[in-house]
Length: 165
Image (cartoon, rainbow, N blue to C red; front, side, top):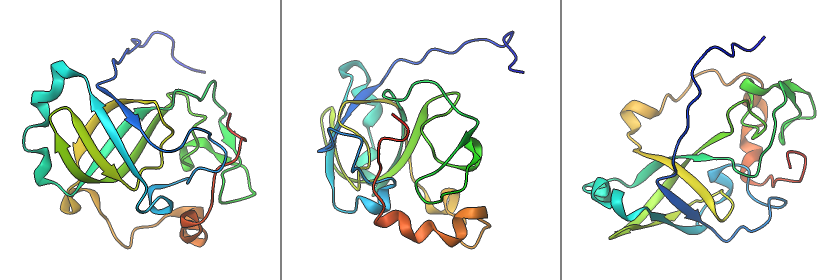
């Protein structure tokens, strides 16, 4: 049972992610399937000072609201496997807190606009936060990847469908 006594959290977007994807069906399911796909991020003007020094990083982590997802399922059938899995063992958008994450290539910072590549996000997605990607902090090669070990390489060519709409 979900603890309803915990505080509710509300987040204001810090910007808007723009991409060529206007329909969920057919989108890449992970950034490695969106190599070279370009997009931009418009940052809220009052927050642009927070972009100082970001251009020194080649990759950034985007945390965003999965704004087109409603409700959640504790068991989902992921794009890469026909077997229903626990939602927390997947990257499904049907989550109790619809928060997504992508690591993208940062190709430019121009005032309040970030230019990015490898974007796997639908156009108009609200951005909640940005963090610099640091390989020494964020990469753990050789770690266990559960059921994804056998199918992770397929993410590069797998596209989404409407199963989570």
